[in-house]
Amino acid sequence: FGKKLQAACKEDGVQALYMIDKSTPTGKCAVTILDKERSLTTELSAANNYKASHLKEAEQMKVLEGAKIVYSAGFFITVSPESMDIASEKTVEKGTVYCLNLSAPFIVQVPPFRAQLEKLLPAVDYLFGNEDEARAYAEAVGWESADVEFIATRLSLVPMKGGKPPRKVVITQGCDPTVVAIKGQVTKYPVVALPKEKLVDTNGAGDAFVGGFLAALAKGKDIAACCKAGAHAACIIIQHSGCTYPAKPEYSF
Image: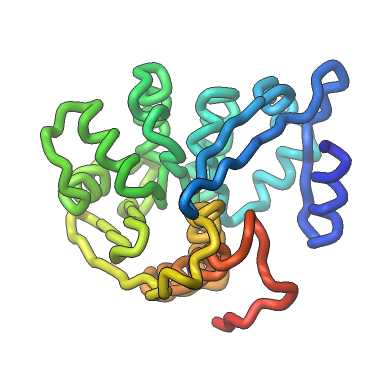
């Protein structure tokens, strides 16, 4: 599986700097599709053994220091919070962008994981999540509200550090508009309407949204254009089985 990952990244021109654990197999994830909705069953294996010492090596640190945008999945909180601390602090030092995804309700429900999330938050320029994750966070911290706009607003008002600009909180809601909160102000952005018969499965929709969003952000686009690109990417992936795309993209910025 590790060799497949390396080959796939190489083929698509992705520079992947993996930590290789010779004593542990590569992690695996089984996807179960029921009524076009997906559920994941993981065996983390080597993915659970990542060490900050690998990030501190010269080759990886050079990439981190040169990156304009750094993105962490919330899942990484369970593996190497020290690595996330290093990455987020580097963006504060360099004046670059740090993005974090809530990733799953359990990340915000387990106290030590939520504590790490809240430790990172002052350095987070873009916080991503879906409506279930946002509501799980509100419940965990006792906000007594299931209103996604209210929750996004509160999260946007957590103070930033190191002179960073105000945080952008981006909460997707499936087929409903995406909620973006900045400095306590909420704007909603439409998603692409898709007939039910065109939906194959929802596997990868959230990650595809973030991928499209960050691609636009890397090109210097505004929030509206970022949300539009994210919605397009998500709409395309849910029309294909698994995490797959057409050979050539039809989207242009």
